[in-house]
Length: 156
Length: 295
View 1 (spheres, one colour):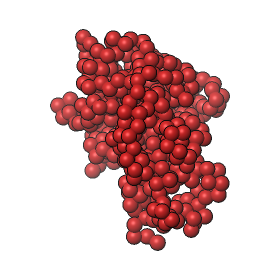
View 2: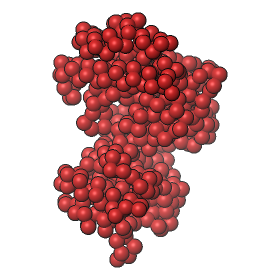
View 3: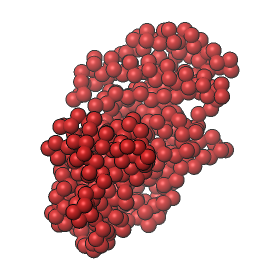
View 4: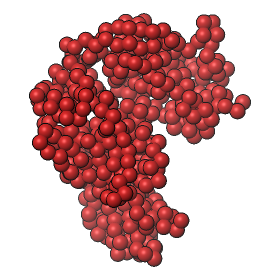
């Protein structure tokens, strides 16, 4: 079994560690780094609950190898707030009631953030298209789309 | 959890091929991982070694080969890269739209064109369209290179023409010419389509008559299926007749769709959906052929 030394930035902190080639990203994040906002649900890249960002792009951590962290910046929901101050996307979700049970929320926040980085002024259709792969069984999505729209540059 | 395996980074294309030759059946190429890691997790296949192609930047290019009139899309190009490519949008607009709707954003960011084709998932959107577009799969192995028509590349579900040490380097997709239009329509609830239909239509100089048609249904059957009877019914017919008659023609060739029963539904239901999608994609392809030529 090959071990790989990897070096990355996880939620703003430099991390050097050794992982097995066959380690999944979700397991390393949850079990070794204690980042339990990363949720395993469908385990087949459909639901989006395990979404994390690698260099600002969303990945299903349930079906990504941990070695892919190497040389990249990793962001999980733990890295969003700045101390006691919530990230604007978190605040927008709260203000718009865009969560209930919270299981999809980490993935929803991170996917929304990735969208806004790639496209700071998404239309409603573009938001729905981008978030199509993040499933929420509580909110009915309207409030989530509204929360993202609120952060769209130049829009209230 | 995954069964443990070793992973080696290939430094060059030749290096990857040599490694595969050496490691044989116990090894697999690793590109985007969206398909491979899924089946490894489910224990459907076991490999002792993965050969990572991820540092092979030569396989990550999209280029227009003017001489051949084709887009050359590298095997490591992701669905998102195809969807965002200006070249593809200009020269193969239907492919661009298709790629922007594959799976979900995470699959589009990770999944590669080569990986998708090498895996031969019967419900691949890309595979169906590339059969209709008459694309070619270009490969390299230790002693030779091959150019395999997409229509001959898939032998069955998860079975391809690839030999053991053979690597897809790129695909060639003919660009859309004047008076030609194409479209792909699918119906999906989750990530994979339950049915898909691709149509390619070429019109005559006066934009009155269909002179070529290629129709492919996918996901309803084990490999993308060309509907040659329906194609023959359409060729040499005026558009006005085709637009009126298309649903009848599609009805007539339903047995040719040859849908199989699976978790997505019964053959009858899937045939019905595929037929509707086929009518839609034919109608869009005709419209596109007219639009492009009128510009």
